Length: 377
Ligand code: DOR
Ligand code: ZN
Image (cartoon, rainbow, N blue to C red; front, side, top):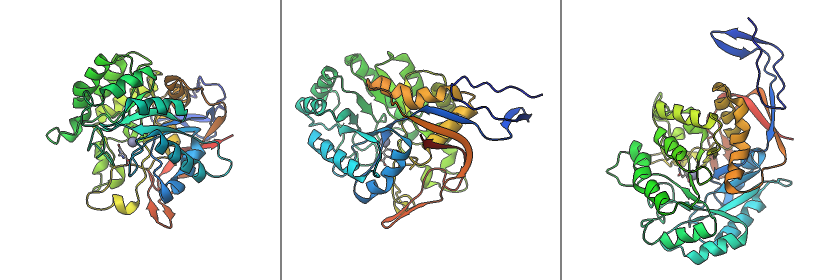
């Protein structure tokens, strides 16, 4: 029996032929196209120097704006440093690129409320990032005393309507690495929103069912979450399948399948509380494939294709555009993009590696075939 495929999204071109096989609707001719508002990336690591020059074109190809993480060496702790970093990103962009970097400050125990005022006034800083000290890459200068030393800064952030972006993991070595997000919610996030209910909080790169429930329990518009492609597509088996897989290692680490499923349900539900944040985090191959390899997955070249895959497989392609292009700017109080991105259902092979004079970078899903391709128009 031929079924009619109805995708309730405007600008969809329907596949010309389709057939049913093994209970799954398949497209015989893969000609489907989506024309969506240009997506933004609300969690992005662009690095600096030659690595920045190497990776920024990928983000600029697929995204209109990116919230740029401040965990450089040294970290971006002042508005002046954020302004300078922004300049170097703009300089590294391919000519004609309309990509807009949205800068963030790295919160420390000594950040001053005055710095938050400066940040707001600058017009280029859009959020402050909380790294619990020692939680992840370049987090050694992060926060050790959120409810003490940082409280005046958090209060100023409420005044300035400046969002706090949270790496939501405790760093206590006695807490199992798979439980660190969960414990953070109970010991830090719940008390934080109780103390400062007006503070806008984004729980970054959520990985668990518990985080989904927490975000859903908060006031809409006050607390939201970004979700990465890896946490939507992979569970923790992917770290060990056929041997240790360093290119699937990120922080927070991949979790059990039930958690992955909870994330997929959350993002495909149509809820405004969840939006796209790739956490694309490039490291040179030799820094991944070594003892004590770095955490971080380089997803910028493939992220949009992968999100489309997740939504299509969940039968929710009509919800993709809100997740990629509406929920983020709406939460941040920024205008949605006006330009468009075309996503076509055309198979392509992810490069095995991107090679640069300084070394190689391995992308997520290297060498694999993907079904969706994106291009700006
Ligand atoms: O896997 C990660 N890599 N998680 C983070 O929180 C930081 C990031 C990086 O900067 O490499
Ligand atoms: Zn990150």
